[in-house]
Length: 370
Image (cartoon, rainbow, N blue to C red):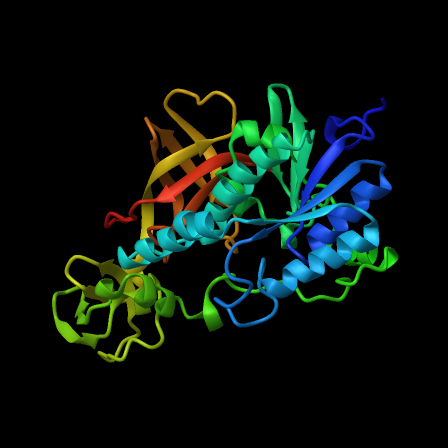
């Protein structure tokens, strides 16, 4: 056999995770065109869209229908797997618990790490597949010590931030055919194959959150966690009351319902005391960012500190930093202060285009006064 995509033998069996969107559909089409034996799998992650009540959300009822229609168009087998219970326990419940702790979680990372890459990789292996392919905009590059995770060629579409928790064994098995393409070319592929989703809009927001209301999900799953409390200035002055810390996020300015004559921002959420701590923007500045649950993809971890770049939010630019890694923990020292660093978000490590790994922000220490 000849070698094709990222070292795969031409004609090899490849499972494609088909969400019903244009990206995963184009991925399946490209692999069919290249001569692979493609099997499409769609995950039912909740009760056919009842949880969201809207179109354009990944893995809802309409999306399952769309994925099946694409598979029919391509002439490939297609299966829908009921992952609803594991998605509820691994992603939705964890999301609600994190919000109730005063964090700002990223459920898409947990979904990729668990039900998609952990569980679906196992299923793909059981089917005798040589690889699992997805429509993520990220690149898998063969390195001297194994597969490496790199940012997408189209930086505006790059999704590497959401895949930092991918393990090395998973990365060995995964393929990302769209990583070198711009979005316009992906849609052109879908049109060329006359796929029924060629003009389908991209999914928006978190798939299981109705109308973007995170508080609604938390109230439903953690009713005891939604308690009123005080809005407190960083100087200790009580400024007002709130209906629950789940209605606030670090760095928030609008909708606080209190005023002191100066712009106020949410600095910290005290879940135990049901307090929202607010203050001036300058008080948001952070340079020390402790992390937990580190996932490392960068080869051997060098002793002592190392100079890297980090992303603290999916849309933020790379920021220079110094990293010191311990046993399952790490400390990132930012070279310049960042604002709105929130526990529960991810801090992802980069060196150039390569993703070295990342971890979850446990807390963010204030910059020492000069």
